[in-house]
Image (cartoon, rainbow, N blue to C red):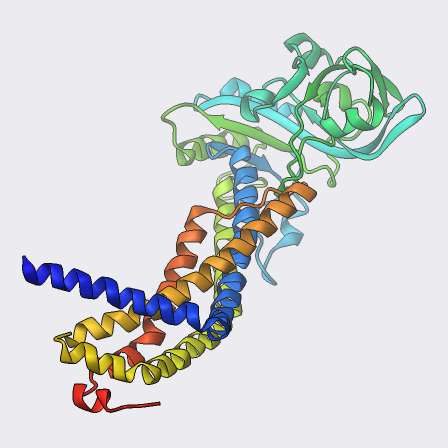
Length: 420
């Protein structure tokens, strides 16, 4: 019991010596912190920015639906120089007739929708929105792509089937055309035709992957087909199919392949003239990109961390030299080698962690400023904070080990003779 009390007292005094050395030599401490601060700032700031980008991209991908397959002309998986675009360009675009056949024949599909998009000007009175995204959809589109309608309602089956001139508009469309007016019941002009607004989508903000609804106008596809050729190559038409519960994507893919080959009257052995895409293809493509980004982030900050580590090691050598006599007295009083070792390791780790925390604080302030000034959701995550602190501690441990080890090996008699 007595030995434990003595050990705790010596431990407390040891850490007090280390803290005193840090506080007394302020300039030296600041210079030691600078390299670690810059290194942690470099690494974690890169990770913070790209984590935010990755989060937005993955949210956009997930909004497409993990259990939704897309029947389209072009495959999403792009190759390099071997990509057979000349073969794909000859394929027909999916059309409403394909939609009707899938709805009648599919047993594995919970919902089937058709979507086609183009760009047009939208007008109301003297105001207009140029190059708005005009999206023609079939009725079950909302069952596959959930729509956050802030005002009004979605299309009725009669409006959708009959191609009525009704629209659901995004936040930016309303802001530019009806800033101080309730848009519900108002009319806008698209394709030279008047269209009644029946719904307004909630503001979504700038998101990656070009999937924001803020600049969109949703129209029944049976209305939009009167003004554009649905088989045009530049529209990117798609049949969207959501699987029933407990039906895998592979099972749905097999069924869709059989139905589409039958609809297109393809003979056995003839290659498919359509592609069936799913979001996992996009996710896998981005995974490799984010791995490269992580490597770049470590390279950017790694050099600063190495410099900071050498700075801490140098300062610790000086600290050991200055406190040689003190070390001799401690050892003469019975302090063990490991006790002296951990004393100086604590000082090195403490210095490094403080430098890392300063770097994290700077990043946190910058993320708050950017999030407040710009429409960008930039967050310093707990994972990145833990990573920054852990890396700082490891750098301090590695940098301070040799000086601390040398201190622990000093001969007490020789050490006490040292004078400055």
